[in-house]
Length: 103
Length: 383
Image 1: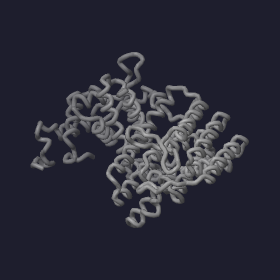
Image 2: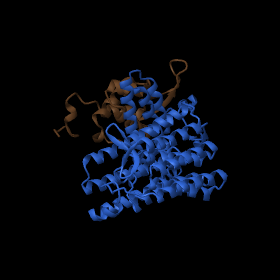
Image 3: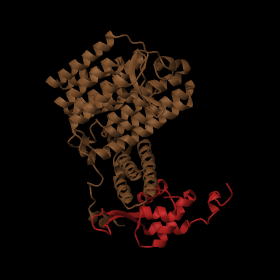
Image 4: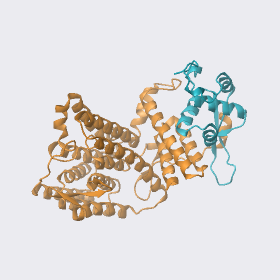
């Protein structure tokens, strides 16, 4: 289980985005853009979340003909609970330590 | 160009990712196609590559998935041993790293470390780009080998000279030794295809090395051909061996006036004087260079001639460094040798499950796009 005190600000941001999306599926680049998170940070997070059952991943038929299927993601029930327990931090709060104290 | 680099980087990421994360690698490749801006695409791809490197390192150093059946550590070890190109890449990264440790301990100029590190990065990227290029461009096998060997010959005719040898070419302020990265490629190509065109390439390379002269690489080529002749004798192989031995004999007959360069030559002897651990790092790095050949030879009987060639050529380069004033591969200051090692990886067989052979006689890595996912998999996998 991902312990709450290990969740980084980017992880919280991604969880919040996916929680807001509800049952809708999101793609990797969309999460990068909207969460302003680099792919090198996003994908390890998504991999970890899926391995631990907080995220489900699915290949989806492309919107345009001739395109390959895209990988899409949404939170599971436990993932939604994790997101609610670890809300995104307010801007500027990222510098704080894990217990909210200045680093 | 940035889109091309991005594609190469993300494909390399998909190759590097451990087997249990292959789906994620395919996802990255497909996702890249949805990004229109070249700069964004390149940034996305490089991030994916960094992710893949970290995941690969974690996967092989620790077991992040205790739910796997059986012994997950042994599963991963055997999985790596069964993927010769990946194993060789990891060994190369480790060897270069150990070389950087030695050079830092020995007080080498920082530019030396930077150039070796840059050669490592370029080598990794080159593997990705050339793997990608091999899927889309049909290059005649014979023409490629002859062209590469001709570059070695041109170096001997028009390259830079020093101490009675003409082995180098200047490229953007850096001096490269083409034979170091072209001879292994030509040799491995011959080991794979063993046809008349590849033999012609070996003949040209042997002549070029005799002309320069480059006793170290001539000896490495001869040793490689001898190993191939033992593993898979045949008329063309014996002819190639004869040419390589003749070229080596010419270099023995010619005076070798090369002087030892610090951090490049003779470092097997000087490293222990720096510190015993520096010497140990160097020897370990040299052993890692040969590890993929030994592992492949033991595990993949069908391709033993290729592993014999790979191992013998690089053993020859190591022996030349130990016995004469020749660059010490990967662990010494030599970007050319680092590039050569990575380029020679392309001559190794891919993982057994992914083998098919292209027109160039190079066994191709499986493409993520070829393995289009069954959409039903996603529906049944939904939680």
